[in-house]
Length: 199
Image (cartoon, rainbow, N blue to C red; front, side):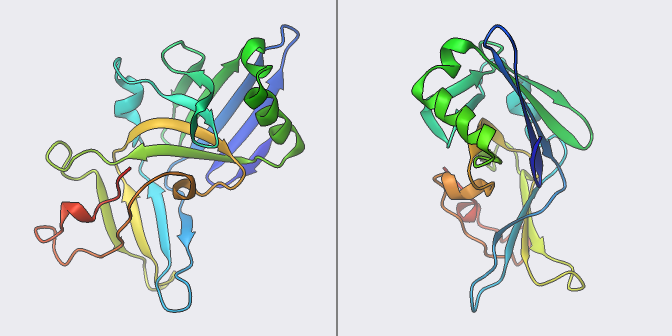
């Protein structure tokens, strides 16, 4: 079992050569994305329960399991049913079946070797926030309770999920291409939608 908040990842291989991966991505768990450096404020992120439900339920949207957020290194897919999901109030559970022909590709062998050695222990989602006109309250940004610290918190309530990746460092945004702005809104009405994260 490979673990690291907010996820767990388990690997099993059977006699047919298929490899099965099980990942657990926990909701309501804050990840520290930045310590704020010398003069800034720390930034943390968390996902609300059900944040990925739209993408999981959509018959028109695929979700992939990738190596390192690279779309040319796929391991499993929702569309071909090699990647399936279970949902609980606490977690999103991923189940992937990697056939021998994929496990024996260069990227498949590399990924499984890194997993087996404990070097690739991260599970990171590739996502974007839906347009504000479609989902007005998909995310919220607020200040951490002063008793806990001085971070700016981003809570994602709804996200468009494209993929989960096996990564060496489980920090979601480091391997995605997103512009980020951590300005706190003065009021809900004054919050500029151009300040949200994007791919």
